Amino acid sequence: MELVLQQVLAGLATGAIYAAMALAVVMIYQAIDHLNFAQGEMAMFSTFLAWQMIQWGWPYWAAFVAAVALSFLGGVAIDRILFRPINNAPILSQLAAFIALYSILNSSAGEIWDFNIKTFPSPFGMTPLFGERLISTHEAGMIGVTLAMLALLYFFFRGSRLGLAMRAAATNPESARLVGIRVGWMIALGWGMSAAVGAVAGMLIAPIVFLEPNMMLGVLLYGFAGAVLGGLSSPGGAVAGGFAVGVIENLAGTFIPYVGRELKLTIALVLIVAVLMVRPTGIFGRAVVSRV
Amino acid sequence: MTVPPRETVAFEDAPPRAAAVFHPTTRQLVIGAAVLAALAAPFVFKSFVVFQLTLVMVYGLAILGLNLLTGFNGQFSLGHSAFYGIGAYTAAILMDRLDVAYYWTLPFAGAVCFVSGFLFGLPALRLQGLYLALATFALATAMPQILKFQPLEPLTGGVQGIVILKPDPPASVPLDADQWLYYFTLAVLLVMFAGAANLVKSRTGRAIMAIRDHPIAAASMGINTALYKTLTFGVSAFYTGVAGALGAIAVQFVAPDSFTFLLSVSLLVGLVVGGVGSIPGSLFGGVFVLFVPNIAERVSTGLAGAIYGVILLLVIFVMPSGAAGFARRAVARLTRAVGPERSSR
Image (cartoon, rainbow over all chains, first blue to last red; front, side, top):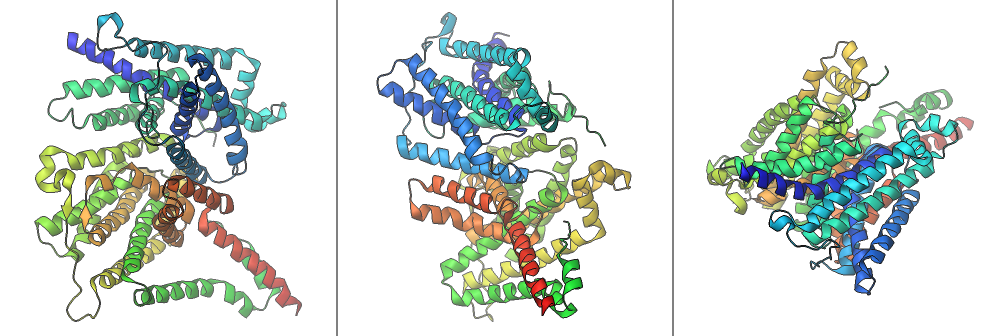
């Protein structure tokens, strides 16, 4: 029983990484209605910006705030410059554009900051929490920040006029435009916010996985898996899904004999697909009803 | 695919002969010219280029498989690297462990992939869009791990993979091994492209496309959507699997890490660049997948990825619906420009 508890705790710690990323994934999904494959690389790039500022001698929180603000502007710029012109292109073409963006960001980060791994400081310290080695103060802090971001986004979307306008633009662009919402800018805002959320996620993840241009590849895929598992239409579901993926991965590695260790990723994914068989729109997702 | 209005305009305004120049015969002429050029290529280029062209055809065939599923049936897949890998490994195991001749490995690889694709299509029936993407992505991630899996090592060779020998041309044929493999691939390619073109034109093909355009309407017209969707999954995997087998024979080597998720992404990029829902476009996609990364690498080693991305973005900005859509629009514009001019004479 103690082993189960330990593994669940360790799973939650890794799950926090995925949950933070899943939140950014859902953010952009709400705005543009599909997944952004370059999300992880955008977060990585933001984290490098923060690292650079810390190298210049800025205090951590100044670099943090600056990096989030720059990422927000960068996200808006990417939408206005790259994606607005191909707004009407087929979805698969836009997907290829995401892949192109991924490739550009990854390769430029490698060229600017090289591929050696770098340490990134944590604001919470890396000491073990409660004297347990399974979860550190940083990981606990990360879970806290992720939940706080979730709460903030929840109140933004439920409680503010702007949040309501963004939701309207995403659900029904034509009607939203008719009542005077500037849909194009709402989408750009969605890009900016998801870039900012991604930047926070990146800076929280970097102390654990270390900073290098490829740090986000695995994380993003797990983040996708978590978001899809929880349901792409629900930010809370995505965070829960992210934690679930971390826990499932850890438990599968520990308790399924013989194949567990080597194939733990596979087993986690198979389990997720199995869940989707039963709930095809994710655990917390709403089914889309289409009018014929 | 909708028929552009150019035909009616041409028939009304121009004498029938002028119209005929631009309608079906043009297409046949282009195909004929392309085949002739393909036949001549091995005598023009160096053997390394011939090898690269063989790979272009292999990728083109794999992209055609993905196209049948995504372009014609509307099912999204990030898992085609897995079918490519299954095809490649089937061929390699048959040749290396069982001494089967290389040409016999293709039907086996195709059959194995057809069955796995069909079986994978069954759970995929429940999922749509991004959820299907995730499920197929799981398949793509699982494949290298399964190939490396310890208990399967006697069969798959584990991390090391399997080295196979390049097939020699028959003694009576005065060609070197690269040229022979090129012609062999070309023959397979022509047969399979013709097969795909016929499939799409048939009653079955219309059913497949009806499901893409409107699943509910298709079902209410009496199309067995579940059956056609799983069968398309199978056929798509069949095409990609045969491509995988050909690829393994051409490269003479299979290893788990050649068939990762990144291969799926390459195939997807090829699909988009060539044109979703276009059979000849798939071949253009193959050209892009093979040559553009090389070109980017030559421009700058450090920034190769960035240059690749910029080229890809430019291609999407210039041709949002792929090379096929671009060609269709260009032809339509040319006919419109030429048509009235002739009628005024």
